[in-house]
Image (cartoon, rainbow, N blue to C red):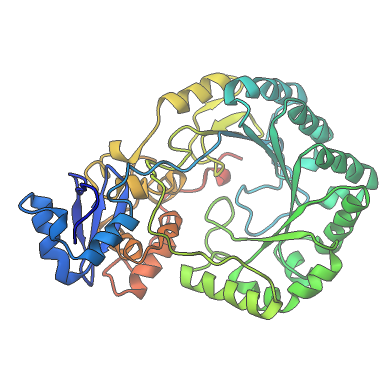
Length: 446
């Protein structure tokens, strides 16, 4: 095969072992491609400089081209800067899966004036692409929550309000929130199940009927919302069987998104899907039985460059209700306090001290560093107690390699227990289980 233009492999290419063949990876370009076993010797000759790409099998050259080996290095995924404002830890629920361990307000929570001061600083610090979220606990329990949200919109910032919706059983409050929606805010209302029985059993109190009434009030006032319906392994049968009935209880055309629990706060794993296989099987069943369109994850020959998660790279800042500041919405790594260092100093700190995978001791020499990005920094705190130390060994590199060889780039975002389950499923030698070594800060800083 004669190529129409001179091409060469990136100089830092490495072949990682697979069950069948090898995975060719360029760390500098953040690209990968499966190499069939029969072509491995020829690729090694090209990598050594003893021959050119022209000597490779034409089909392999086409595959390498499709996987970006002859293009410019891959770009990073667009990740607009964001600020999350947890205005209270108080909540009218006591959900068993709560990732923030909400329920009781923290001592000395932020005042309206303190939150307004932060809001006023955000446009200059984040720019016009800045995104802001208000959450709790239950933020609508705070008398000034809507006023703070209105101030965010006045600053021409993108706003999302996360709520369980129940306070909007008051039509007046529902009308005020609808006013925010009309000005561009997005409201996301969570449900813990598709029926009163399933929803209330995981919420610590009666929730479902009140939430449905509140949603009706919001829509009657001209607002709209996205429903975040939590999907737990225990509720797959119910979600599949009752999804259609739930839609009948909600306003026509309302968008329903499925959410899954993750390890943090009170969630210790009981409500988490044990593997990606089990999660995908549940989604397939719901789509089939409920007649819902659930967009399937598609393989892709290209991934975005990932030097680290956005939190590790200083893209985000999250303000807890007591003024503590964190670079991640999971709020495990404290980087300052509103009343001590201040908001601007904390933002400057996370921006000027990024933690890219290539600079971490364990990842410094890893071929996959610009694809994996050392995983989730907050998860590192939970599993190893050190943000700069991901839970990684040969098995993790091997299972990610096998997944990338099949073009499953979304696996780069899988939680560690899903990667471990996939290693077991593929017959890769790996630990029997992984357990957090640390305790979620949400359960320590009360």
